[in-house]
Length: 213
Ligand code: BG6
Ligand code: MG
Image 1 (cartoon, helix red, strand yellow):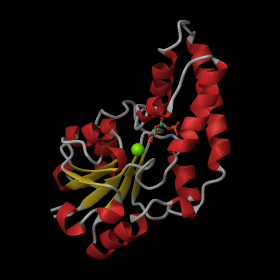
Image 2 (image 1 turned 135 degrees about the horizontal axis):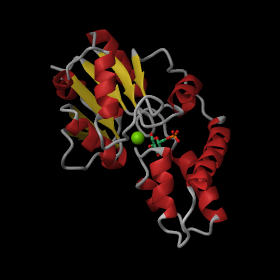
Image 3 (image 1 turned 120 degrees about the horizontal axis):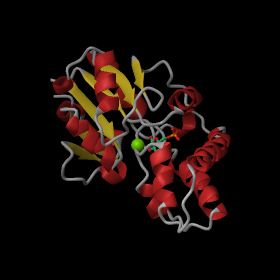
Image 4 (image 1 turned 90 degrees about the horizontal axis):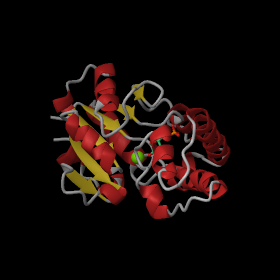
């Protein structure tokens, strides 16, 4: 019986991928590193610094720590600029209805995201009040696929992992949810991953009676 649902943010509640892509692409171009949409897929669920490391691997140069921190900062400034376009219209299909179902059944809801921008994003889309707990990149040491962020969210709601359902769109996040001992509903490009407990194209296609059982 599911008592709490922990939602990843980027790609589950709102589509920010295109903004991450544009911001990383700006940085990669400046360094002469090839960076495609496919490369961007691999950064889903991965923290900012780890994403940067993955991009810089393709460069023949090595970069001092200080330079890498400045690059990550530059990417984030550009990303935050692009986020100014976000509004409640960017909430993904089925999210509002799924949250309403949880409220009507007395099931708790939290965020489990690797992002350090989770709070401003939730505010921009008008969902800041919809979650009892926000576990995000500002509060964890190890990023997905480590289960830390989901265990933190479950702890904040005092709900044992076996009664939690994670909703994820990234392979690293699906693995993190499973490693936390939780059920995982995979959506978007993760929906066909065989290791996920359930799969649905988006939240509007997920059957609450199945995934909340
Ligand atoms: C995750 C995204 O939610 O957050 C990743 O899927 C991103 O692509 C990560 O790198 C960290 O985000 P931020 O906002 O802290 O740079
Ligand atoms: Mg995601």
